[in-house]
Image (cartoon, rainbow over all chains, first blue to last red; front, top):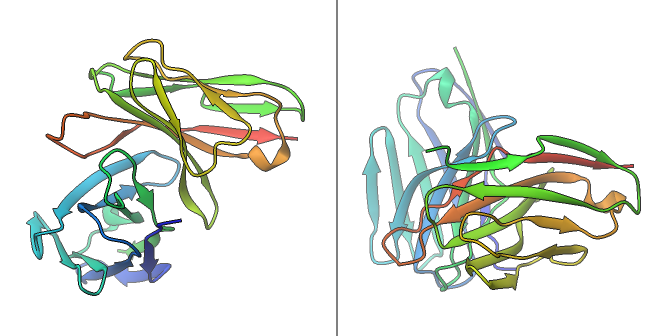
Length: 111
Length: 114
């Protein structure tokens, strides 16, 4: 399947540090999205980056996209304990109506 | 707006039983989908719909049926439950006019098949 793969699988940092998660995918895309999932909850959309964009910011989030390497990164600056969650990248595989999710990065931010 | 709602939150079934997981959204979204989430596997698409009366299969459709008679509702039917269907099921919706590709997720249904 056209699945994104996040790296690392798990990340443990202290409050105030930056957290970087990476996503690689296999086929051409129209856009790539990042979602967050708190334990036991549904996913929440964080940010979308289009295939013709290289970088996008939203608050403490910074997303980059390198279509030549088929990879994306999500940077969370000045992490807080409340950022503890799993983060997933999702790609549309060239079609807009279905998303393919990676397996996620589990982020733990300790006070 | 309630967003995307799912019922029940938890369900235990015996092998061979059937049941319907309910999903409803009040955002007038044309697109709705069902995913299952298993440990270490991420989310996998089961079925999706781009509007009332239109459904299509995703990555893992076997053992599941869907129908879309209204814009608001998109129920998922397990025909004959199997232990391999033990999972957390998420419903999601999205506008389908190209103005946004953000999917809105429900809180999930945790299903155990014994």
